[in-house]
Amino acid sequence: MNRYWSPGVGNLTPYSPGEQPAGEHVVKLNTNESPFGPSPLALSAIQEAATDSLRLYPDPNAAALKEVLARYHGVSPDEIFVGNGSDEVLALAFLALLKHDAPLLFPDVTYSFYRVYCKLYGIGLREIPLSDSMEINTKDYDQHCGGIIFPNPNAPTGIGLPLVAVEDLVAAHPHAVVVVDEAYIDFGGESAIPLIHRYSNLLVIRTFSKSRSLAGLRIGFAVGHVGLIEALNCVKNSFNAYPLDRVAIAAAIASYNDEKYFQTNRIAIMTTRDALVQKLSAMGFEVLPSIANFVFMRHPAVEAPLLAKPLREMSIFVRHFAQPRINQYLRVTVGTATECARLVDALSDMVGKQKSAFE
Ligand SMILES: *Cc1c(COP(=O)(O)O)cnc(C)c1O
Image (spheres, rainbow, N blue to C red):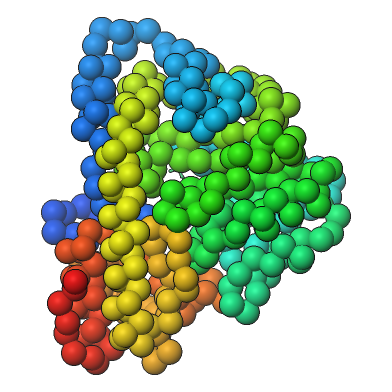
């Protein structure tokens, strides 16, 4: 910090992203990216977009992409907002829809960026504790608030909330916006998108970073009532008129045009996840029931940092959060079957059990 900083900047608590280690033989299970590359159609679209046309600004409205998203998700293009990764969409939603006199409610164990945005914008917050089994209990949200936000499935627990419970929450708070962050919904959850036509206070946020293997391009979107989308556009056009570049728009459209590739990969990840959970449980890990592309687990006999550190020395990266309530857990992204086998073998040495090949 020095004397040139604007007031307040020194008081921010920025988000700390997981490490992006370099190296070829790294098993990278720490930031929930897909172990599979993007659709080949997306990769060719990227090459085809790399022409002289890049001298021109992109469509500020990304209309072609909104068309494709609208058709796929059964909504109208003006019920969609697109942005530079869902983190940007979230940031704009906090500013446009969640800053009120009453506090914003979210789980005590959840995506840590929510706390960061509250600090950035001066939004009051109240953290609602997850149950002892680390689940969101919607009854606990039954209080006066300026908004509610949570991921479904929740991160880093991986536990999903049934659609009926999401609907109950949205219906119980007609005076506040409820944001459902569906970053991991494609790995087994039930999307709330179909509810947007019945509830004008529901905003659903999605990303291309996980199930669509495009974290490197930064594409996210929100779906909701036109009244909510209008607020997002208003804030976005006061900040950056062109959040999605030409290359990203082309790749995003191509990704949605390759339904088969999308389905194959998300099913492979779910299958590998279920096999991984079995292996880990057999080793004595307590694994929370995940419907995401990661698992959240602890071992009753071994401290989490004592697992994360030696794994790292073996170039296996997992995520440990030094936070109350979850400091004994590790969050492990579901990789390829081969990557998961390396993890299981490494862990079985550490917890003193027999090595076993991954099936
Ligand atoms: C990964 C993640 C995001 C961010 O996704 P980007 O589109 O890459 O910015 C948002 N919310 C949750 C819960 C996530 O895990």
